[in-house]
Amino acid sequence: MKPHRIRIDSTTVKSYVSVTEDGLFQLGHSKEHRSDLPQLKINQSVLDPMGIPLTTTIVSGERADDPLYIPEIRKVQACIQKHGVTYVGDCKMAALDTRCYIAAQQDYYLCPLPAVQMPKGGLHALLEPVWTGKQSLVPVYRPLENETDQPEHIADGFCYTVTLKADCDGKAIKWQEQRLVVHSLKQAMAQEKALAARLEKAEQAIAELNLRGRGRKCMAENELSAKVNAILERYGVVELLSVETTSEAKTVHKRAYGQRADETVTITTFTVRTSRNVTAYANTVHNLGWKVFVCNDLELSLTETVLAYRDEYIIERGFNRFRGKMLGITPLFLSSTTRIKGLIRLLSIALRVLCLTEFTIRKALQEQDAKLDNIYAGNPKRATAKPTTEMMLRAFCGLNLIMIHVNGTNYCHMTPLNAIQLRILALLGFPFNLYQGGAGKSDELAV
Image 1 (tube, rainbow, N blue to C red):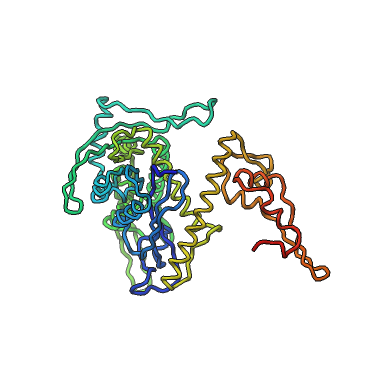
Image 2: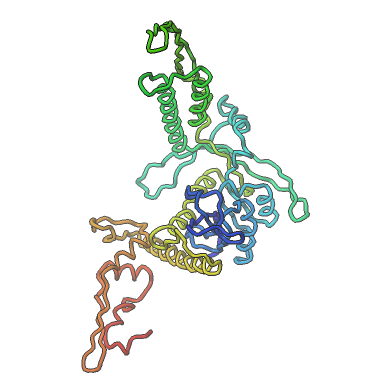
């Protein structure tokens, strides 16, 4: 299969070994949310849509992601010896040097712009014509899997083209780039729900500052204001909540006690109240779910862009398999650089087997317009057209090879394959006697 689209991304692998000056394990930004543990970084390219690893690079854990893309792309180009390929990555691939290099190599890129290159002000300027009705939106629908399904509206967006200039290896490169402004409907709903939850938590936290009683400190106005600002910053709702502080003075007579004379004091208590800024909230909700993608393939449509990037889970799924029970790379306790790289490359080969097996089975089921059953534990009648390799491997649990020694001769007996096991072998294109041929005398076994 000739590669048409290649995905590039990186992941981290944590360890409990000590950090050394020239070792792979270093402290850095952890994608596993364990910044206290040393880690190494794996940068990988995979073939789309199979997810089969094509190249793998292992670097120390403190390295940034941005500079890893061009070396990985060079390794891919040396491997496939082909141009006109689309490289798909996340926002860290959107560095101008990376995009310039890909365009200079007569290849294509597809990635979202990060907030640094597309700040809120720039995005708001792009969306202003949408709100005024001057810019129309193109709807994006998910492809139908069955003719009876209803088309699902998943996004809206529009496109425009810009001309870019940059230097690549000492040469001035000029190319055109398509920018696709996309509004994801489900992402907007999820972000609005999260925003509402943050607002409620902020309001509740501020309201708790007004509670009085034993063990609660009566704060001065400046201290109370500092705590309120900290809460607004923590939940990211500074512009969405208006805060009003009121004071109440109360005169209290304190009777004499011991050597203290009686006195009359005035105690001032401060109370904060919040109210939601309706206009700011509406403007914030309008901007939720929007993302700007960049691509130098001017023939790529808005629908193709959205669907291509939504398949980014393909490479992430491989990383999850690295960290899962099947491959179990993390936590890594090795300290030798040679052994670490050897283990990761060995597991990359195992990941290739997992991906290729899964792709072959799914393609065969699609050609037969069939589904595979008896692979769900506790629900044998449940069938799927997209089984995972892990599910199918579990279907082979319970096979036993029994060795018997009789009169100086070794005999072996293997558990017969059941119907689902034979079907999986048939979908893979393997002969039925692949396992059954193991029965008989042990000296007949091929090792």
